[in-house]
Amino acid sequence: MSDKRTGVKREKKKSGIPDAALRFLEYYYPIHYKAGIGVEDALRGGLLNRHQVAMLWLIHSEGRDGREMNRKAIERSLESWFEISGGAITKALRSMAQPPLELVQLVEDPRSGREKIVKLTPKGETHMKKMIAGGETFVQQIIDHMSDEEIERGLHFFKRVSEIVDILRNE
Image 1 (cartoon, one colour):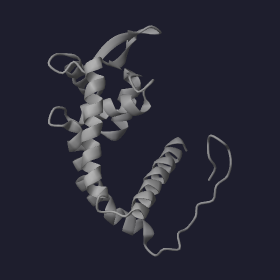
Image 2 (image 1 turned 45 degrees about the horizontal axis):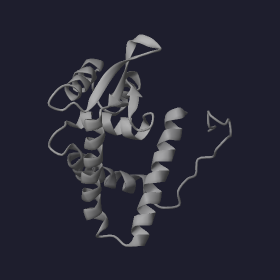
Image 3 (image 1 turned 45 degrees about the vertical axis):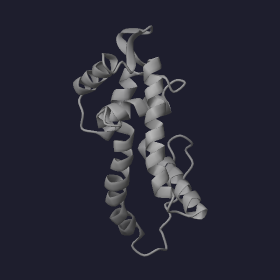
């Protein structure tokens, strides 16, 4: 198999650990649905739905300066994560732009009158800080039961999984 970006051939490594893929799969759902949904609920803070949280997180993690992102880029990411239509994304963004939330502002993209840029408002930036603090508190409760070595290994594992998924997505 070759990496599309570099053209370098990479060999698939077969694990020497018996049933490794099956064992990872057995942990996937407990991690995703117990821990992942717990983190998501902490980020939601009882105020937003899961799609809105994902939109804000995308802006924070992948947007320009963590404050703005092209609406189409948000749509592409969310469509690959959730079964959600462009119309539902527009509706969720509009609800976050209007009172009482007023977390984002939809502005015309200067390069295209049809496209919008989603920008965090000052209230949105404050909300993001609170949202991250809530998520951090939840994760802290988990890692309080781990050794420093377990934490480091867990961080390394999540980083590698993220890198590999990105590579696989681009192949």
